[in-house]
Image (cartoon, rainbow, N blue to C red):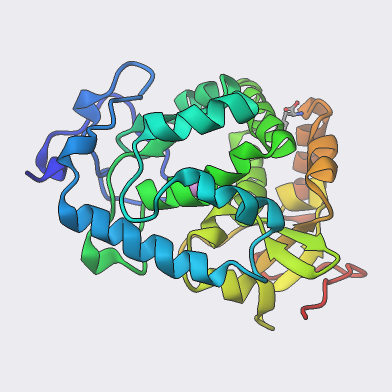
Length: 297
Ligand code: PHE
Ligand code: CO
């Protein structure tokens, strides 16, 4: 049975992190009001599990020297790599570690529903997996991206708190009409963040960690710009949704990230808007005068 043939929830337009014209994939009719659904584990096919196994194996092999230690230490908590995990099994480990839980969703969900889940320490994980023809690139996040990319760092106490704070901050940003600025923070940290370590640059962003090509590109290729994390600079910066990032922001530690984002953003949004009005946005790949770039190994 093809789940994608079923009608989708037309009530609320899901967030698409871009300007896609396709309707979202996934069966939104089965979701509750908070957009969560059951993970119908029995209906994954052998081919689905095989796709997961092949993605996981390819990615795991590339992690040494490219992924941050915290991610490598926790990735095994996802369980056996040979089949799509049951979310209840992941939660048996995750919940005692940091109080987070993962919940199934049919795909991308509206911003406010997403923020509310994060604020409650519930991370939404798409239940479907990409088709074999989409092995290297899938437009929307699937269970592999959501689980492999995002869940290991939810085992890290500081990052776990950051994600919850992001959710609470998102609910506030909705009221302040600042979601576009806040989304840049998610993009450049949670999805495409790099961290500087004594051994060199490493990836912690889920969009990088779940991508076969971007892992190497982000950490080691000469083309992209790599600049230090600066909240206001970041919020002025545009990003790419259909190619590897042209700029990455580098943090020194998860503590630095948490502390830099802890203050109330209400005045920050005002300052950033004023700066955009006077100096414009920063294009992806653009480096500002006097800005230091991180060297690659
Ligand atoms: N401090 C932010 C605010 O007041 C909340 C936040 C924390 C947002 C961490 C993002 C990440 O809006
Ligand atoms: Co993601």
